Image 1 (cartoon, rainbow, N blue to C red):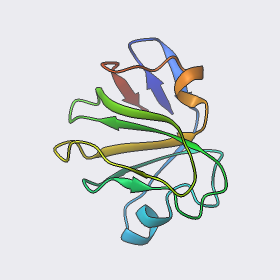
Image 2 (image 1 turned 90 degrees about the vertical axis):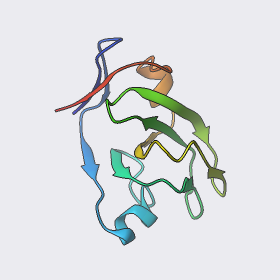
Image 3 (image 1 turned 30 degrees about the vertical axis):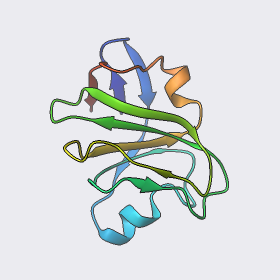
Image 4 (image 1 turned 180 degrees about the vertical axis):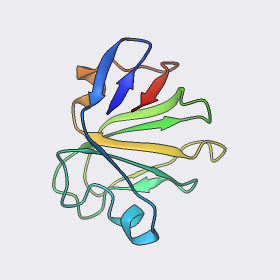
Length: 108
């Protein structure tokens, strides 16, 4: 489960941790229903996705430092490379959970 501790909202009831290069490359391709969590410093792409996704970037303390709502297919999203924890979420999750910059995120 992923919670927004600041807003006391649920971001996702279920999530998958991605570890291998293949898992990270695929991300939400073929799985637009649950959140995925992984580390990367090189940005992400939405090539081969059929729908938009929400993306949240966290610092080492799991504080939201960047995000992109409804990132459309065939796009790239880049951020400051000192942050490397990424949440890829179904589109609309950021709005539904009221997540914003500076919020503290908790994984259970």
